[in-house]
Length: 196
Image 1: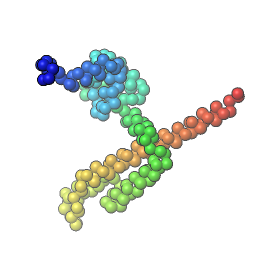
Image 2: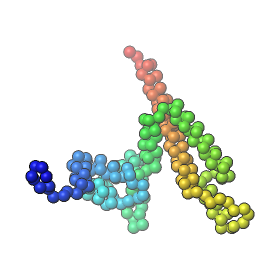
Image 3: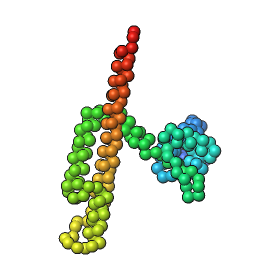
Image 4: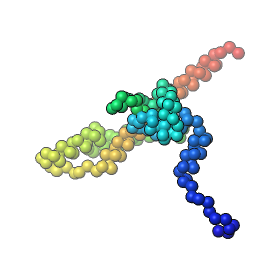
């Protein structure tokens, strides 16, 4: 090396990042961050370990997040409480992200295009959903009767499901955007009618 000093002992980069995360955030912030990416039910102890806090602290903050609707609870096989991100909070977060990046006019256009594409899938395959397509093609393969149908492409099923999910998020975003306009309009009309 040019400066003559030997390199220091190798430090685990992940451990250093986690140490910084722990020192720069509160237990509540870390627990919320962990549960924000938890879609399968997990115990408070598992969340505590990932959030680098005590299980008792995790349980307290998880109960707060459950009361706020950010997560859902379920009873595990052995009677313990399990936690996961609520579908509602995920939909609201996705809708807010869409509204931040897409105007409502553009959103209406995209929704129309997605609906048209879904109609094309239904017409092309003669079923209403990707799940029905999979069942239909599986049944045809098992019965081996009639004309052999073309094997269903897994990528097509995945694209159909993704399109359907994206349409649901876009519809939610449009609904929230419209509701916000009414709330803002009501707020303005109340403010305008207030005596000066």
